[in-house]
Length: 169
Ligand SMILES: [Zn+2]
Image (cartoon, rainbow, N blue to C red; front, side, top):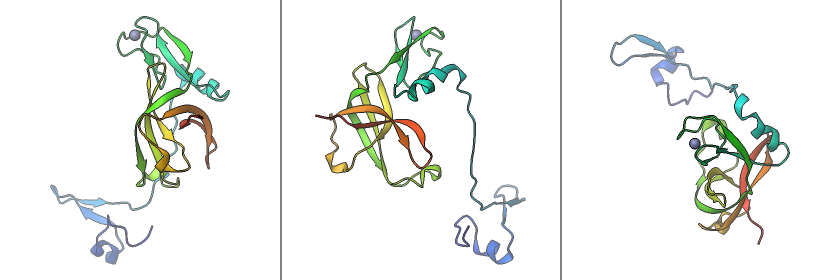
């Protein structure tokens, strides 16, 4: 980390001790300036079929057996009915762009990606999906355009992800 870190004042840098003082209590606090790399695990047991099918190029949503509501990303407990009886439904991926934004200033864990577009699309099944929209040229994006949700490999991690692409005319 460079000595220009804005979280550390000049006095701290001169003393070579990243000690700051709590505004209320005036107690000394160690303020670390290192960047944390975060690796984490999340339980996905109940929605594991989603990942299995993703590897086959299929994108699944769940449909509550009681109220018929469709959920994406999948969640196996219906927030409306508070029941867990669901059907897995393969989505067509076909939809329309409702809104989007170009991300130039990224969260730290996304800082290694080129600028990217986050979009909300409504699929023909009625469900809204938040995902990246992959385009060569952002000037070609317009609200209402036909888009398709597809499985692709995101580099450099080589993760399978779902993202929108413009639908072929
Ligand atoms: Zn329900």
